[in-house]
Image (cartoon, rainbow, N blue to C red):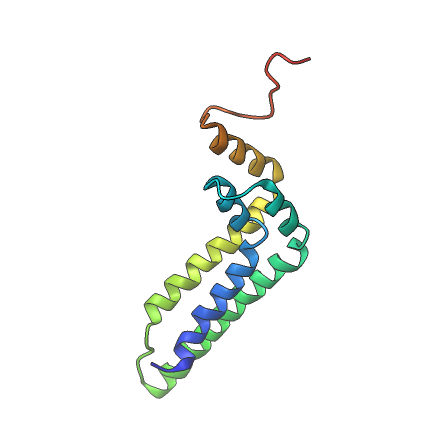
Length: 132
């Protein structure tokens, strides 16, 4: 297996990892009960850098994938791991997309956290119960 066949997947996953550092990773840590919201507050300060880095990483992964695919088509060779690499690129795109959604729609993120932490599937909005 050539290094060129592995490059697109690795590049895309590094981008996805960078992008998820500000939104998905802290959310997973909180949901698993391994940390607090302080971790998310710290990493959210760098979302201006992490999310674009994730987008660039995934886009670069797709570019490298299609460049290698064209090269293999021109040489009449078979690209090693093309299906796995494409699947990883798609999953990495979903990770970055989810990070963008969680960042752009903070109310959705807070409702999601409230539902997971309370275990209340019917929770909608930010009702304060009987408080006035």
